[in-house]
Length: 271
Image (cartoon, rainbow, N blue to C red; front, top):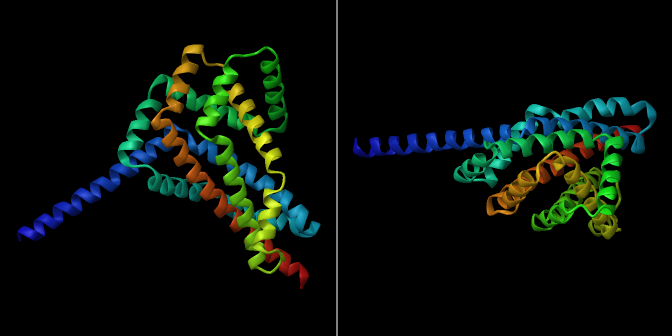
């Protein structure tokens, strides 16, 4: 009887701990406004799928392909995948510590500004405007740019974005190869993907600088300093790594799923 009660207590503790972690991750998901970010990723994914369909398929197949591709970007599944992967990358205590910052006025402001800027910059016209604003800021020797670039380097944002892009592209090409509609070796795929790496790094850095400069422009100098201090702290670095682990894994899986759908369409057109 004693051991049964002891085991039951252990189960209860584990059960409660799992729910506590789920709550912490869910609260962090809400604080970072990841539902809005996922909506952007969905819209951009479907838009890219149309471009992919137009590049690989006959005109008659594009609309049907896009409709099937939408299944890859279902918001409910994206939320579940995000929370599951974030749970694997952050402990309950880490998630709760990060939440403390994002429940402060500066944390709420940073989250709102970043997500709003991410929504805006998904439009080509806004992206070009942000890049023009960046050039003007460089010309006027805006002192914030040095701090923005410092954060980008500390968080390894260029490298993380590059890793994610390469992994997604490789997953896409490898899946097409497995389906027999792309005849390339692994090394040939890698060579194609990594071609002109330095140019891509430059483009990523420019985008990150333009995005950050636009996003944080409404912050006061003190708010800007406080947020950058958090970003460069152990918790900020931990959060950044966790988010990249999550979204890079999701992007890889989405690319693979999209290639699987595309491959079936390509094979059917060859019949």
